Amino acid sequence: MPIETTLVTGAAGFAGSHLLDRLAGHAPVVAWHRPGGTPPPTETPIEWQGVDLVDGGAVRRAIDDVRPARIYHLAGASAVDTSWKSVVPHLQVNALGTHHLLESIRTCGFACRVLVVTSSQIYQVGDEPVDESAPLVPPNPYGLSKLAQDQIALRAVQEDDLDVVLARPFNHIGPRQTPGFAVASFARQIARIEAGQAPPEIRVGNLDARRDITDVRDVVDAYVRLMEDAPPGRPYNVCSGRAWRMGDLLEELVHLSSTKVHIETDPARMRPNDVPVFQGNATRIRTEVGWVSTIKVEQTLRDTLDWWRREVRAGR
Image (tube, rainbow, N blue to C red):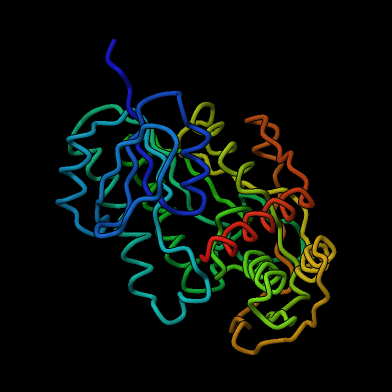
């Protein structure tokens, strides 16, 4: 029986790196990163390949060479704030890149199960927790690009009979997240203050915003469960089902620190279209797949702060 290979796109990213940890030792893994970049060191044997998803020919050649049995498609432009100034690159990577990947599988003609990770940002925001039947009305350009990705994946199931599973994650946080995201930014600023590298002032955006938060390690566990058990073409929210006030998360991080800080609102950190509350409904993934988030947010914050302490000590 031939050895089945798993491919992870976006493997050098935040969730991708944790997914590699989760998959370690289970099967041969091929990991894609952006061409020209340097893949991060890993403790397990992984074959790294630099593949540009926007280059359809390159994607098809790489897919035909690897011929994976499973693909976790995590690659994409992920920042909501930068999407306002870079609409086209977001659409190219998130939508066109996904099209090239799925089209390559179709034309190469081998059996492959694909998990496409889109986003909760495709939904219209409402007063109640959002389930998978909510209207698809993205509130920002990033969400628009992820909606295009989501619909391309559904089309591949409905019209091309591909085995594609859809994950729609809400906000996730944890170690290794870049400081362009709020909680990682808070933790990095505190770590630099503790190390004497910055004055005791934390610059923040909207602290009253409430977001559904899940630990990234729980999120990648959901991806694995969906790959194993979810039917093709049926989307699943990946979320905790609880909306946390960003100010409360910051307060907990400050509590975990020995330093005293001053909180300063920074207009540059405010988003042009920030919704007050965004909360997911996790009923479908809980009842149909049996997945629930298990890591408490207090543990996630502690681990995130400890990771940034190590990064700051290392000069990164």
